[in-house]
Amino acid sequence: MKLPSPVIRYVCDHAVKTRRGAFLSVDDKGHLLESGGSLALYGLSDLKAGVPVADHVDFLQGMLPLEGNAELLLAIEVAPGTYAEAHFLPADGADWVILFDSSEETAIDQLLQQRTYESSLLREQLDRERQSKQEAKRVKGSLRDEREKARHFLGSILPDAIIERLNRGEKSIADEFEDAAFLHIAVAEPESLLAGLPVAARAQLLGEIFAVVDRLVQKELGGIVKTAGLACLVGFGVPVSLEGPLIRAARAANDIACRFRAVTAGTNEAPVAL
Figure (cartoon, one colour):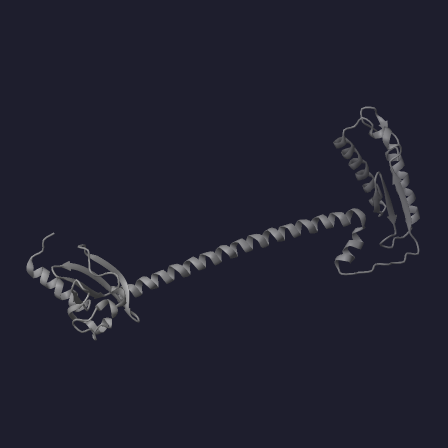
């Protein structure tokens, strides 16, 4: 694009004034021919004609003489906190180095880079926190599951009243009961009862039997103290005192015997004897 001469002069004058331009002219031996502009800004005010510029200006080392092509270097720190945009132009008998102040643009770029870096760190921190929360949630869920398993396990071997006392923090539980009764209930001849039944059907049958037993026991305010295989031990008056535990145990035993007197199970219609 060809610009009119007045426009070119204006653009040049504007660039020199606003971007504080400076120039160096260097011969093919690397010696300074002339210089001008805002040299002090770039720390070059002490340069004298005839000196080898590469010995005094670090960023010119290895750059001169040019090999016929124009070059551009961006964001060169020519002095502490001062950055320049360096243009290298080849000419007959000399190479020109033109400097424009780019300190403000470089500062903005560095600030943007810093903000980008900080954003990246913040994103990584947020990712770690999210992962930590997910892990904590997973561990919490795992602990909740383990507590639920422990609760079910305790419930299968201990009465609810004892479990509640353990949960309240009691360490040593030793109670004395002046009047209590125990009823031992077991499946009689389990081999003939369960013969020919698949494993799932066996489990279901036993579950149904002891569910009925549990209901009849609870009717007399008793509770299963312990289970062992196909048998269970029921307590009356323990671990909570109860009036007439022996009579209650006898009534529960009679109810259970009556309930299962004519009950059969399985394809062989084996009697469910307790």
